Image (cartoon, rainbow, N blue to C red):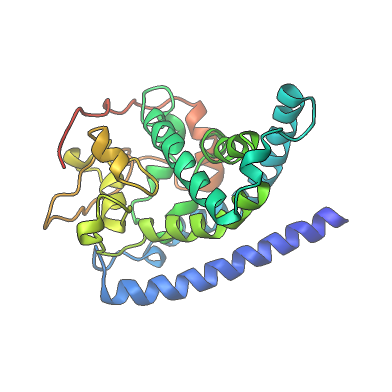
Length: 275
C-alpha cells in the first residue's frame, strides 16, 4: 500500500504546482501577453490532455528513472555507486550549476535529434499544442521523456554528481519550462542570448517556416547562437503554433500510439547563422 500513498502524495504535489503556476501565469499573461486571447483554458480538449500529461508523466518518469539508474549501475559499476568522489565533494550549489550546464548541452543536441526524420514522430506530440501556454510544458511522449530527461538525470548521477543535485534542480526546471512555454511577451532584452525567454521558445513552436527548427536550447540560447540555430527577430512575435498536422489527434491515449502509426517527416533543420 505504500506505493498508493506515494502516488497520492505525488498527485497532491502536482496539483499544488498546477494551482500555483496557473495563478501566477494568468496574472502575468493578463498584462504582458505574447498572443492576446491565447490562454490554455480557451481550448478545453487540449487543456484536458495537457493536465493528464502533468499527472501521468511524473509517475511514469519516477519509475523509469529508478529502473534506468539501477540497470546502468549494475552494468557499469556492478551495482555500486560511481566512484567519482571529487564531484560529490563539491558544494551542492556548484554541483547544481554544473548539472544544469551539462544537461543543457545534452538536451540541446537531443532536441535537435528529435527534430530529425526518424524521431520527429515522437517529438511531434510536444508540438501538437495549437494553443501554446504554460501547461504545454508537460506534453511529451514517453519515449521523448526517456531519451531526453531521464537519460539527462541518470547521466549526471553516473558521472558522479549527487542525487540531491538533481532533486534540487527539479523545481527550477519545472518553473523554467512552464515559463518559456507561457503566453508572455518577454524577450529578456540584452540577456536574450544568455537565458531562454518565452518569445525565444514560442518561435521554436511556431509553424511559420522562418521559425521552424530553431531555438533548441532549454535554458542557454548561446548554444543556438554558437551552432547557428538562433532565431528571435526584433519586433516580431510568432502567432501560429502546432506541428503542421491539422488532423493530429488531441487526446492523451491517441497521442501515445500516434508515433507508431507513421506520420509525414519534417523539413531538415535549416542552416543559419542568424543572430
